[in-house]
Length: 390
Image 1 (tube, helix red, strand yellow):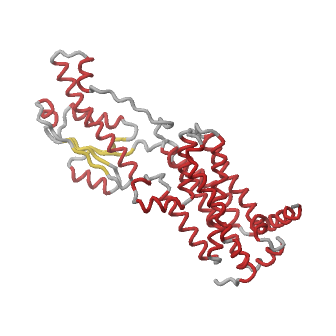
Image 2 (cartoon, rainbow, N blue to C red):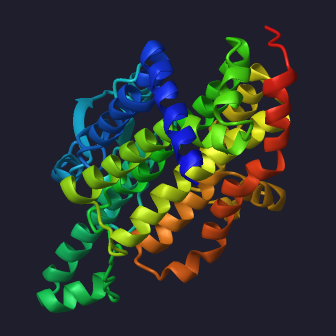
Image 3 (tube, rainbow, N blue to C red):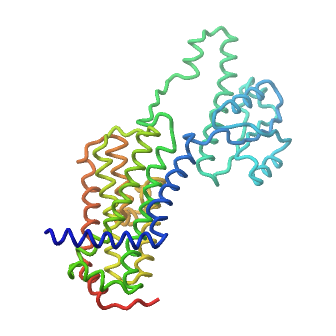
């Protein structure tokens, strides 16, 4: 046992020398992860987009229409930046990306409200930017509802109804809305917690087969296996240990930053955070070793890992619900570590459910960790026999 530890120690020192000589290791394990963490968390530091530009086409020019425009401008997410003479000018402003949406108030809107002829106002918004489109759609709908409610309140007051009676008539059912664990509707909480680990996983996916494959490329493979006494398991442990420590440091640093510096909600506590970070790093490395053992080619294994890591974003369910996808896609999604990272975060960290609720996801990450045992013998053969082909 002492001999194995000594071999792992010397191989790790050798790997640290290789990492010091090749800048790609420093960039992929430290510099790029820090940049990614700061970039994503600061990109949405306001929680959600605010003061998004909208336009108005007010053909009614009445006190009621101007009140509707003031209400729209008062919303946190919308800001009226332009008044247009007709619909064509407003449409062209959207096409020039000057505004995201515009409200059209046709002539006769106020008189129609007073005579109960159900006048029609229109709003147009661009969904090219999905979040902006959805938020402005909500604001524009609210303005339309508030406009009709204001006229209704005026008419009811005119016939002698009390304030309580007016409120009951206009809103017979009061909605008590609660957003669990994120009452601020902070998009940073929803997206950064999945996007940043996903990017870090890309680095792990790509660097693992690269590290192994370059042993063949630079004709160091036989020396590497010899240092491990012919034991490929010892060789891989010593070689990947420095990277594992660095990637775990980045994952733990990211978790500390978002949960204890930025204050992201985590009612599940620290245990699932620690467990999830360790399993995620080891699962990605396990898949990278498995991919190289399956096809001991630097180019092919990196290509497979890059495809796998990029598809993870689509199939994780963080940006689009997985249950809305085809049943075949739902099954394939279980083959991606980021999917299980997101599910464990959502259940055990964000919502505070017991770890047993995510037993399947924990088990799947553990399966990724043991995947290399099926292909490691092939890696030993590749290190001793194969010749690098560009």
